[in-house]
Image (cartoon, rainbow, N blue to C red; front, side, top):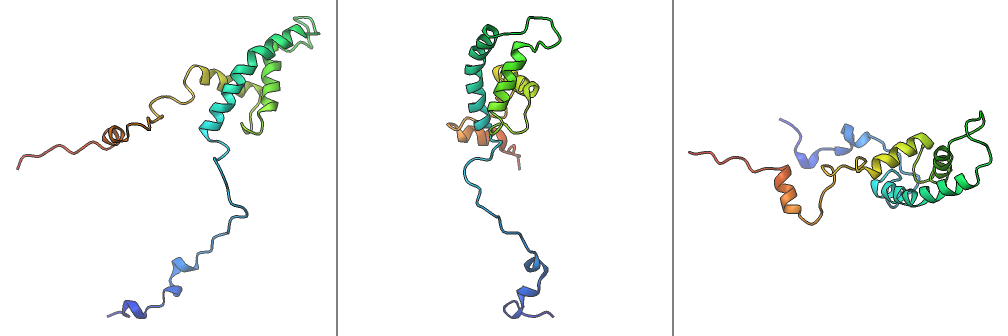
Length: 136
């Protein structure tokens, strides 16, 4: 026989002894790696990039095919990566170029992972199909 439930001391149980660190500050808003922030930033980069390439090509001081020549697109993506370093964490010009290309071609957020918020019932049916009806 055991101790009745109302007379048990729950404070002695092991789950109550687990200590958790309190958060130092409350996290507000979207997390920094949220796809919406990434999409917004890449949309701005998509608008700025052609203008920046034209501007850098017009201001190009070093002649082509020399040792100190940096390609116009590399310079543009480098400037854009330094501009977007707070929004897109740990990114250099090559990864920004690849991410921008994937975003333009629709491979960054494919449609099979994006959900239409208008038709929840159809989405529930798709994810959780009804079991087949069995004959008695």
